[in-house]
Image (cartoon, rainbow, N blue to C red):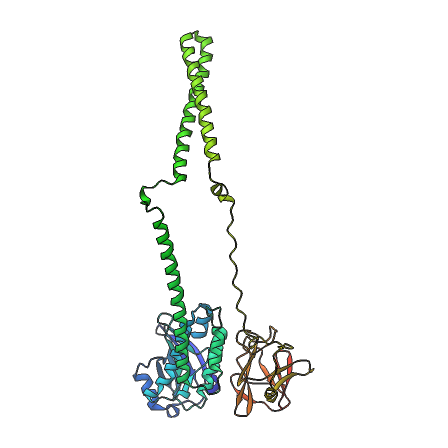
Length: 438
């Protein structure tokens, strides 16, 4: 729930090298603050609550919250890929802060659960909430559930399984309570950690197996071993050197023949011709050996440079279950129980498509992993609006969408519930629906 919903305006400023969130409200004075709560907040370092400083000027009070070293949680989760276990830890900290309020005689209804006003310390990964020491009335459980859904939509969670669906299932139960939810989160985290440990153990076992196999084949000290390829390279260098010497000898012989005509030294010429013949024979032998070395290379080595690794098989992309990917006009071949016919529907004004509201919290938007009904329209938010069942009544709530949600042609305020009556018109982006109930 945003602070603006409680009648407060907010601003950010720097003062004395510290960063503050400043909450202001018309006519706010000390007499309107719950003063013993102010004392608790200013005199104690309460885990998970942003430090408060109450400042008064000309009988007007403003609330200063020290945000030094903190960043907005939703922004942090968008920019940083986070593991499943870490995400669960963040949710667990949120619950801890709410439950810890009673230890300081604070009222959990005064906590602000808004995606722009919940913060995290990037170093310690501790979560911090804003507490407003005034009388406020809100359903903290419903606010928490809506806030967690928004986090799931915006978070960059590192997962390719049904983790998101698991989280949504835990949130959407009708008899939701903090203690049960916390225990269920612990169970999911234990399962995640166990699975991760199993993968690590399997990798380590495979690595050890390969290592043992390699050392058992030959039991030769690697430092004293010359491989076939290395030996071949040594012979090639030797023969190459011999070839160079032979060529030089042939050149000298050639020059010696020419000197015969200039110097008429027959003895020198004879020796030069002998050297030349020997050099020519050496060159012939050298090239025959080199040619043989080339032919003796194993077939596997000859083709190594041309061999291409097979492309790894791509894992199939995570596809959400049908429960999350229903689109306008879509349907399944499953048999529909007659009892489902009692669920209300959103029907397009032209009557071509209808949406069965078959869950106590029914999310509408563009994100297939989160929403129960998907509208393929860029004007629709990732999690645009939700319909809640409370007792036997249904309420619609806009989830901070950019283009808003309209009820009977009037734009509704975000994060507030509006009762739906039979034949009410609901407009999301450019699509109009009629709410019908049996």
